[in-house]
Image 1 (cartoon, rainbow, N blue to C red):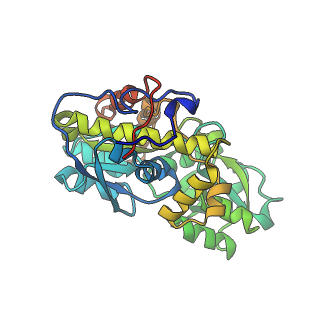
Image 2 (cartoon, helix red, strand yellow; image 1 turned 120 degrees about the vertical axis):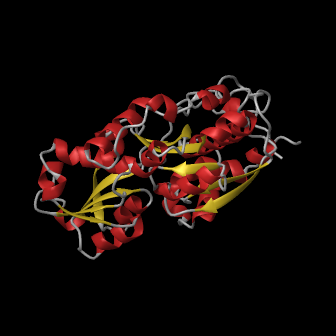
Image 3 (cartoon, rainbow, N blue to C red; image 1 turned 90 degrees about the horizontal axis):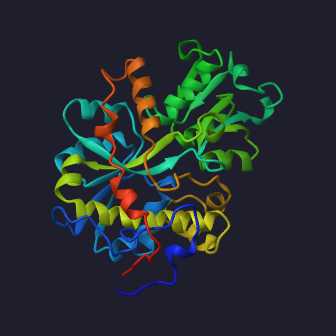
Length: 345
């Protein structure tokens, strides 16, 4: 096993990667699966996974990881329950909660994207020709609004709450749901006036002179849990070493990405790696607001509880699942304890 020059301890990014994250410590309950599959969407907030694969951190942990493309996190739920997938990467949503309520136990094991200071991929954009007229959220009344987030997802919950806090009931608004790329086109063609967007299409809209930003997720929903890594409760209990090794490698990937995007060394290389993996132009990756992560990569339990309560209140789930059964932060806590190098292979 060889070691690349990248050393976790040199990053100084708010948490020090631990013995587990860097190869020396791991859970010992259960057997190790050397070949695992993860469902992913292939977007900028998958940066930690992308860098873990490209830099050899998964292989450094002895894992052969196959990435399987999905359109949404909700689509990963069934194959995860049947064992066709070992891990998933996506938003906590009504579909996730309903699956848990139906007896398909799953557990969130790491932050994949959250609204952190100056690190938020959720952006509210106003069409540029209307920027002088629409100056705040209350001004959305009477205008056409486009959502890039699907109904029932974590981002949608926080965006909906923002509208409601400003006296705008969803039922009274002119709302259309789009894919991120279609929302960009709708703004460009004048089909919508306001876009509740995500990166990198928000940056693309700004760069092309289509829209101007009004606020970001860290403005209206600080520390909100937007997306997570998750696995089946069965795998988390029967093969703890497998899950730990996966989280170890992921933690190394996240910190390499964060160090580069926050002005450290290697930004050009990291940008190219993400661009190659996602198909997003490298200049847009470089200019876009970076994904946010909690300092120790833990899932925000308070945010998940809030999302669950909102989904139940809106009738999208029958009941809010018990948060303590939805989250296991033990793997990331073990992976972020001490300063050691990240092994590669």
